[in-house]
Picture 1 (tube, rainbow, N blue to C red):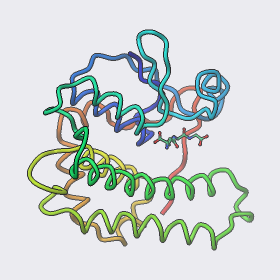
Picture 2 (picture 1 turned 30 degrees about the vertical axis):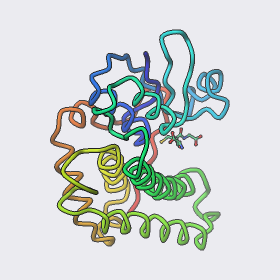
Picture 3 (picture 1 turned 90 degrees about the vertical axis):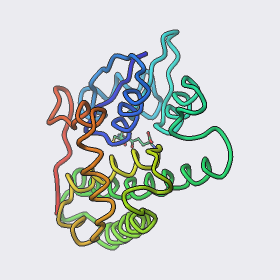
Picture 4 (picture 1 turned 180 degrees about the vertical axis):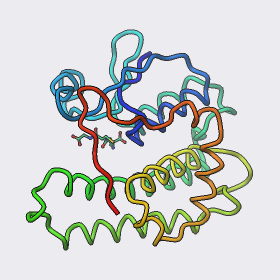
Length: 216
Ligand SMILES: N[C@@H](CCC(=O)N[C@@H](CS)C(=O)NCC(=O)O)C(=O)O
């Protein structure tokens, strides 16, 4: 199978990390979803977003949660990062859902400042998004106990929260500092030292891509 995307995309990175956790052999085609690459992406995903997973028979899966759900089916039940049923599944899905919503709002603000002329940025909107990002991450932080959401095991919730928090800190360090999410920070630091995270360090600018800037 082939993962299409970039490690600088947190949604792609959580899929790439999961592939490595599961030791599933794959190729990666590095593409960012802007600039010259956009039209090519549109041919395989109507909304031209990353990540995309191309299966060996040519089928394409889009949306990171859909791809993760598929990857879970490829490993035995007891190795799944998200169980296939029950309260633990609901809890992990919910944690990942809030984490995704928080990072979606952060990305919305990055795009607002990246694509709009400076004097056309609508500040009440970015302020509302910032509050939602903050509330989401602070809620996640409060769910953590000694760097785990429950028990001792690493689940998709720890992976997703660590990836999304690292992305937020990289893009908006001062904003994240003000959130004071010490548990998320500790989780992220722990996870970034593990092999799947070290092997998927976010890249710098990619050829044909248009990197998003950082802001405070
Ligand atoms: N809900 C999607 C979000 C994917 C997403 O927003 N990817 C960004 C890159 S980080 C993208 O492709 N953006 C391009 C665009 O919005 O046109 C997922 O979980 O896969």
